[in-house]
Length: 295
Image 1 (spheres, rainbow, N blue to C red):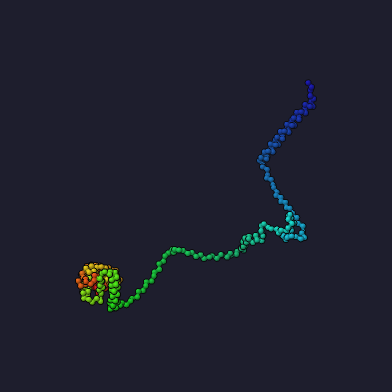
Image 2 (spheres, rainbow, N blue to C red):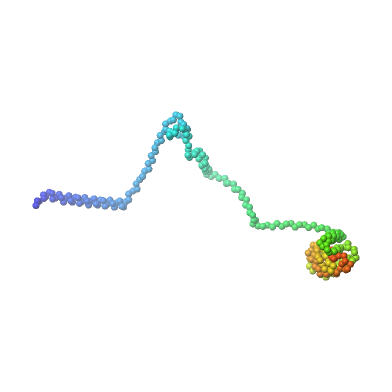
């Protein structure tokens, strides 16, 4: 075996020791660097915005321009014909007019005028409260009472008119029946005697059955009644020609005639001539609760 020289043996461990120390120191330095970065995060990066402005080149001055514009421009395009340029956004002046007017500035301390309030008229179909207006009572003028003679004269004329009208209606309604109208102007004895007997019976029955309500209320008045009597004394019909003004008296007169029926049959001399007698009389309910039948 060959022996190594002593100088070569001593150099190799020294180099290995330096290499190991270098590795250890590098590991420690790197470990400490990572811990510092974990505890202290890096500061945010600062940014800076840069805007590049390109200067506009002024076009060359045109000696004979085709159109007038706000700024000088050089024309382009492929067409030879000169067309007026159009603005797709419209007239800028019209756009400015359409813009809303700026709000009016009011100085501090100035009082703004209050807008006038329009009067509102509210109409309702139904009133909340109904007010009743009392109508003034009509004044009743006292009319002078006519005299008894005037009343009797007018009553007699009305009886004659109604009797004649009844006679015409009776003859037209029943051509087969023979009729006779009896009133105050009847002067034949045979008819006058029958009419007087009829009147006495009616007054007697009427005074016996005088209406109680007329007595209590003291009602008085006169009415005209038409009674048609057949040959056998039965009643053909009863009609109220003129009212007394009190329904109680009108109904009482009709009831009294029905109570007094049937009347006496016609005597032979009357039966030969007529079949029905039409009697028209004035019925008077007077003071003292008395009934009278007058022509």
